[in-house]
Amino acid sequence: MADLSVNICGIESPNPFWLASAPPTNTGDQVARAFDAGWGGAVWKTLGDEDENPIENVYSRYSSIDLNGQRMAGLNNIELITDRSLEMNLIEIAEVKRRYPDNVVVVSLMVDSNAEAWDSIIKQVEQAGADAIELNFGCPHGMSERGMGAAVGQVPEYTCDITGWAKASATVPVFVKLTPNITDIRVAARAAKNGGADAVSLINTINSITGVDLDSFTPRPVVGNQSSHGGYCGPAVKPIALNMVASIAADPFTQDLPISGIGGIATWEDVAEYILLGATTIQVCTAVMHYGYRIVEDMTEGLSNYLDSKGMSSVNELRGLSVNKVTDWQSLDINYVVKATIDQDKCIHCGLCYIACQDGAHQAIGTKRTDDDKTDVWIIDDLCVGCNLCSLVCPVQDCITMEEREFGQTHMSWNDLMGEDPPGDLFPRPKHGLTIGPES
Image (cartoon, rainbow, N blue to C red; front, side, top):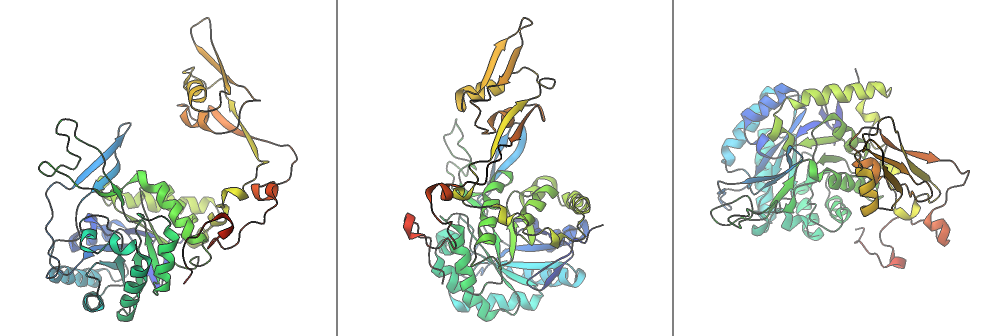
């Protein structure tokens, strides 16, 4: 069985599976039950200064998007940070660390933007036994209107300064949780590193409205006769999160910054993808809210079996193997050719591939009705551009596959075609008018 233990910022974790700062980590009882189930770590639901910023939640807080029968493909929330007292949370943090010394407890924090407030709360959670702290610079609703959360994370200078305050006070590692509600996540990651961050966590939730009640005309979740934008999470955000994780892992300025990956993680496959793109640990919220803590059992077994199948003795061997496989479009091989092939024995003659290609792609599928009133389809090879759409819409597994064509041609990129050298560091690229922010 492969070794699933990881080390992030000098913190030993029995496995990479952590709970994100969210309702599943709101109490000591919950975190204890999660550790009993097999989670390696937990990020405590965000603590604040209740005297300066009292927390009053509304009663309708969640809404979701369902997709083809899958409930909660995307989850929206307008819940605030913990509404439980700081004193009670500190007592429970200390008790959990006493009972589970080998598990990781990271405490998420959010207070007013002044050094004294951060110093005070950091000292308190360290005394309670926190292994690390996570600065919540990502919450997109409620707290951001008070000048915290995403209001900090969207301004690189604020991110850098407040991270510096935290590092001046903390004796444990400082994680910075980044907001995805920003043009380029690399700017925020660079700012966190410049402030002294030991690691980054991402992504926090995405600004969203999941839908509108067509009878009352009120967006969901409904609070009386109004609503508010909230934070979007769950399986629907995973592709966005993976791209942002990969961007930070590939950026020369932040590629040595440890990453705790968050966003739409529910299975061992999801975990493996995050680790391949540079994450050391992962954090889960929505899947636990949907299915409970015991999903970690399948994650543990699945990841271990996968590593065994790859001949890897440790999860650390997997980390970052896909990072250098992500490149700018202009570096991709124009001479690489794939075309669709239909397995006629598996075809159920639904005609969906034909409709999709005819109306939404490149008109590269031929069709005719047979004598027994079936729809025969075939690929028109000269017109197929290998876009993959037919294989994506086909309801039969492996009926339509994309096959490589060998032409004996050498690698040819857009840069080669235009006679340009591939860019090195992406910051900045003034030739193309792109400036993404300062390196320091």
